[in-house]
Each structure stands twice: as structure tokens, then as C-alpha cells.
Length: 98
Image 1: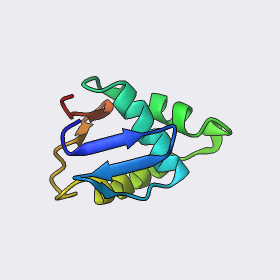
Image 2 (image 1 turned 90 degrees about the horizontal axis):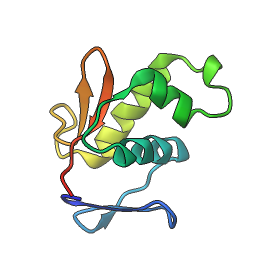
Image 3 (image 1 turned 90 degrees about the vertical axis):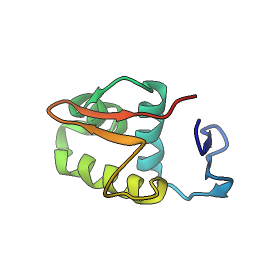
Image 4 (image 1 turned 120 degrees about the vertical axis):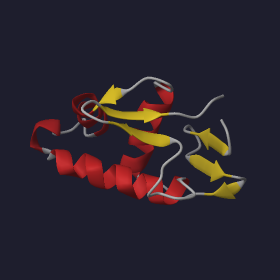
């Protein structure tokens, strides 16, 4: 997809052929977004799907922090994301074409 190659089974993530190290939480978040590519995923859904063991105790700020870290690893300019975009009032979308 675009400049990215993701192999979730092998936990191998690359941008422009260069390996990118992702935490388990970042991997889970990325997987949910990629599986729903082109569709906005609500913040509540992301919290439930990423923090499966105790989502009720996770602050929404944890999601914002994880998105920020993921953008810093995948986006050329994290301040102006091209791929992991915010859908205001809803959540986030993975906007990479296949």
C-alpha cells in the first residue's frame, strides 16, 4: 500500500523498504486501521479493539498518544499526515490506496 509493506504475521513493517519498529500497541492500532482502510474508525472502537484487556480503564488520551507515536514512525511529516488521518468528531482513517 503506497510506500508501505506490512506483514502482521511476521511483525515486519516497512516504509520505502526500510524496517520500522512498532510497539505491540502500535501494531494493533495499525492493523485495525488497515483492515478498515478508507473508512473512519471511531475512537471508541479503536480503544475497544486495541486495548482488549481492560479497555474500560484506558483513557482516550492513550489513543491520541499512540496515534502520535505511530505517525512519527510512518509519516514523512507527522504534523501534516497523509496516511493516518484524523476524522474530526469521529476518529481516524488509514487513507492509503492499495
